[in-house]
Image (cartoon, rainbow, N blue to C red):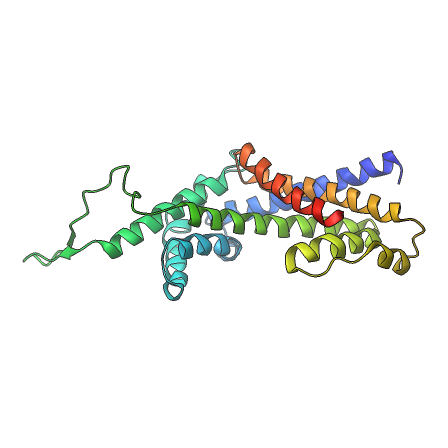
Length: 260
């Protein structure tokens, strides 16, 4: 593949990635509106971000049996019910941190509510003995490292799935099915499912390739496209470049091991 053609296809891949991000943002913005399609968009947003929210809730110490209900409550009461989506905007690029902060506060309040003793005075109104403890140390008894790690892991998984869809679509549109098959069965399937990577010799025989370098070059090219798509997805929903760099670097290390 010559340099000019590769640059053209890279631009197409970038445009496809940007289009996917714009579609996701349009869904978020529409979900916060009163448009005729807002209900459908809210359902789409809830389904898309459920795994990351649920992962945080579950790792916060809430039982598996109750995690679904708590996740549902957060989505209905906070994410969709308190203008959380209306505070998100593409130009800010901080939806991940906004969502994480909200679910963290919700989980803290939920755990404190469960642990706090209550008293019922003669008036019949229930007061929590801890209602006045809204200081900065309210999460001192909750280790947030594990739930936050679970949230980020699910978030990256979601973005990886989006990046995979973008690269697969690019391959189909540009008649690059061979390149996609090599990348998918050598890199993606082993990374996602633990499947055994297909050998270079197998690819050469299957696709009538004449040199191992053809497989190696394909893997390098497709990896660049995948990483570019992933960076685009992560960057459109997060304003922490250091975190994005760490996450992509970790993934690159895994990809490097698969391409050896």
